[in-house]
Length: 254
Picture 1 (cartoon, rainbow, N blue to C red):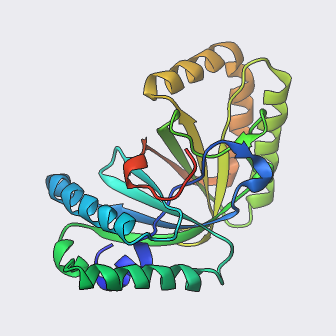
Picture 2 (tube, rainbow, N blue to C red):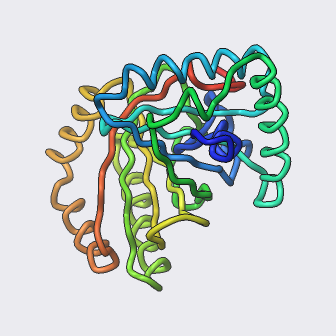
């Protein structure tokens, strides 16, 4: 975020992801995502500078929806719903207008964020058929701020087979009493693809761990069977945890 170009590219960032609980058809399908990396020693200075920027976004009424997440690995996801790749021009135009107003107000982003962070951007697509919301609701809510992102790096050409395994998970969850919810995103434009991102949410780490342990105790054999079916299609898997940050998010329904 922090040359003028990145600010224009990122004043709007990623992550995976959504709005207040709403019916599934209203869920945006594409998201512009920025992942921003901050050294632990710079977190305090970064947080102060970023808060100043967010205050100015609000002052100048940045007309974009932004979902912001802080990870436990000293990074941030800035997530922006977009209609399509073509709509990114409109997004950048809105950002440029606010950046100009901030500069007129005396806020020089290049100077303020110098040496504080690095970033990378991507566009992701919500895979409705692979996501699972048995109650018919999707989205980011303030009552479930804790998030877990599982990055599945697929072998090239194995998307169809991997999708079949996820659908088997869905069928199995439909057959048991306990419920689990998740969203699947595919990386449409970015790095190290094909890559899918599975996003889980909970009130806190304890609540997520408790549910995971309950399911494993009761259904470990079946889950083991399904996981063995998924493994041949993976190059590797990474897990990141973190929290939704309402104070740095913009224009979402609570």
